[in-house]
Image 1 (tube, rainbow, N blue to C red):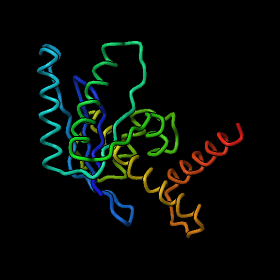
Image 2 (cartoon, helix red, strand yellow; image 1 turned 60 degrees about the horizontal axis):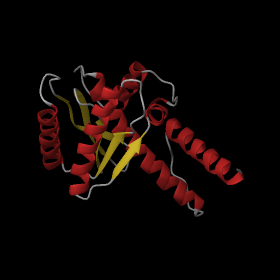
Image 3 (cartoon, rainbow, N blue to C red; image 1 turned 45 degrees about the horizontal axis):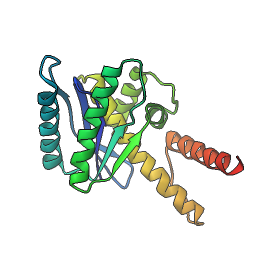
Image 4 (cartoon, rainbow, N blue to C red; image 1 turned 45 degrees about the vertical axis):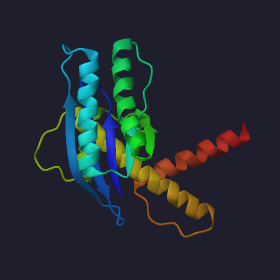
Length: 195
């Protein structure tokens, strides 16, 4: 399965594309940071993002899209840019019938490092361990986008394993981070039922 992860932003929008395999291995397909100059008029910046997303979708043909869920911040301008970039990616995916999943930053951190409180350096270090990136250096937006794609790959796998084991099937092995994620989801479901 091919997953395109998006760390949305208007000035810098990270895009990481990975392939996931049945043996749980991950392969790097592409990683880019789309940059738009703050001095350009907003419509031109949005058009540049759209053009780049169209090219990435047509070139790499992803099966799923993973986007960081937007949270309210103090800086309204920053929130608007993130929301606009997210919307462009979502519309391009919807146009092609590609499923879109939204992940919170803490969900991504927990999936990648085992801790929802990990910092960017810890997430980037784990991404490098999970996907061979060579000696190239990447902007944080790029590694964040790859982390989103990895989270989506593992989250989907953990959800599938949970469904199989709930139906009495045999559980396949999960990574420690996936196991913690599955346990947290189980606790959350149990908590909702008892409240």
